[in-house]
Image (cartoon, rainbow, N blue to C red):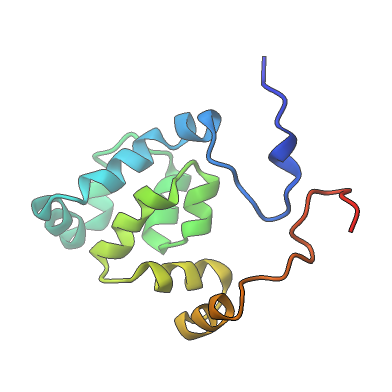
Length: 129
């Protein structure tokens, strides 16, 4: 029986809960493997071959290959694990976050310095303003 998840109606938000953790287990373990230099080298030499060593779904593999972090999160990835992919590519967390929002690194930085995103559209569905 699925647990009641009142947080499921936050627009644009995927909560990393136990269900997401189970869904993304192998994706996240792949990401953690990138902490070792020899694994990073193998991944960079032939990304698809390295990914095929992991029992991940094709959706997860395609998310990694496309460096589509939002797709990876929807497929069970956790941003703290996914950051290992960015680090392997020489990307900062700020660059990665910008890519997830459709902004450049500079636009993302400026938005955060200015106080972050507007609350408009980022409340629970049905929440009073």
